[in-house]
Length: 94
Image (cartoon, rainbow, N blue to C red; front, side):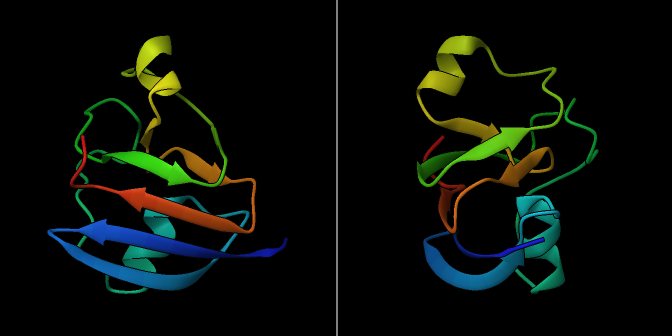
């Protein structure tokens, strides 16, 4: 699969990492030592919600977010697979 640049903002700190299209945004963050919020990793707890500021993703599962929240740009990072080459997720703006 292809590579992707992911910028993740957590606690006011922006970090850009190299990720892969076949890994969730959360998995890429954890593998790169970003202190991203998460708990269940199954899309049910809402701990890992972030706001997608740029780029596109596909949610594998979604038990939490409403259609209007998704339209506002909210994603569950443990279920979000990148579908564009550049992603910006703000975990502070939820």
